[in-house]
Image 1: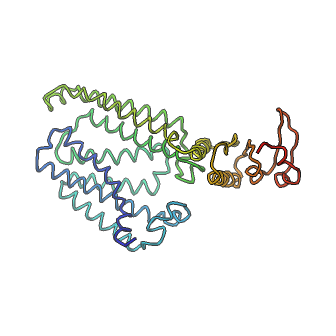
Image 2: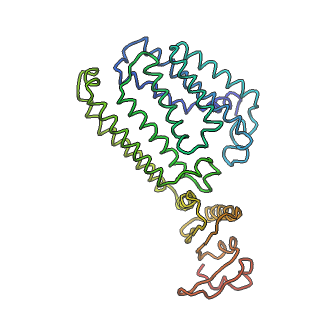
Image 3: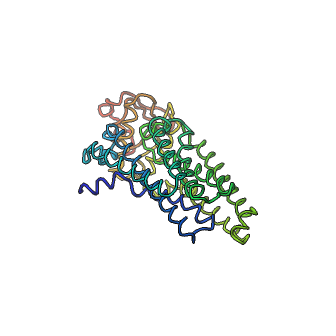
Length: 360
């Protein structure tokens, strides 16, 4: 991989799609045919994209030592050593200066908003990302600042209902992101993102539901407000509400159906991750190897072994696959017809003749 590709990877260009929120004002403000305003909005979008990239680079610099211990993040350019800290710092500085220049070219208001976005994200990276609930509000604030840059920043007066809808929608996306992270867990939540230790799946489901309802109500009221009807010259915008509802419901469906598209082994690991999200003192695993291919069984065994080595929970494994159980057990019990017929230390299973007593 050449140096230019590595530097581009550091910038996370796929995240620039978030700057699409800057264009909300053009669409709902009915000014997409105003050339100067369109130019201002484009500059604001570029400014946010570059500012976000500078923050990503700085975050990677701060986290590079910890990322080196992560099985996936260790491949990042800074963590792997493919890009040096000096290069990264120079890249971040160049992006930040370019972002501020683009913002100033758009308007002084946009410059103030982009500057606030940078400061907010620095605070988020240093401390606020570890504070439950506030972390999601900071994420939502980043999107709301984009909306404000594309409205107030370029002289478009945003509807109060549209701002309310935007706030609820961005909170919805933030809480849904945390819920998706919990869904994806295989190990302890804190090993992925520390704040996940303080989130519970049930709480996140309730919060996403509240925010989804708020976003739908906010958008619905926006479509029927006198200001909106006068601006667009029609009251037919209300007929777009079902599409918005469908979009939000579809997103929720995919969020909760995530496990349905996974392989059997992935579903087993996902089930373990979901159970661990509530930080139990006792984890009960009922035949986790059933119907799973051998290579995945080995992976599940490694996960269980790592969990056991932490020593902060008891693990009860119900299993018929002798080799799998023997490789993990500290103590064993053999049951037949609801009664315990033999027990002992895990290391003695072979000499105790346990293999002959189990089905597999």
